[in-house]
Length: 195
Image 1 (cartoon, helix red, strand yellow):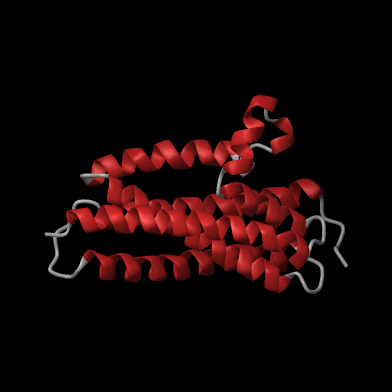
Image 2 (spheres, rainbow, N blue to C red):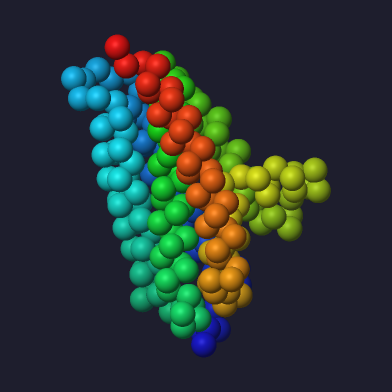
């Protein structure tokens, strides 16, 4: 059973986890942009995505563990597996977007600028820093299309509403589409750079 902790605190936790996922993904685009190495870019891309996903996932799990231990935030029994899948999918999508940005940029400073142009509006429009209910109606269409939205909404549903697999599965599908699209774009752009 969910202990009596405010809904606002749970929503803040969901937003904090998403913001950390986005912040960690910004490191992805800085690594690949503009570097020269004899290692094929596909190998660098794959290794860095896997490493980043593991690091970001561990950070998100640590945040949830701190919330559980120090603030007694709990979730419904059975929500741990969908929560784990949602965090892993969020890590993957933001890592993939970071690499797509790196592939599009010609220099590290350009990658940083592109990342800010992508991730800062995404934080605001996805509900991670501003609840969707407070957004102007015109932003609703953009809100629903962003890859951070299913993570924010999914974390809220799991931590606040006691959701399970039925509510989480469509969000995981949307994140998978974004991840595949970003990886394909990044891999294509990197292939154009290969000598």
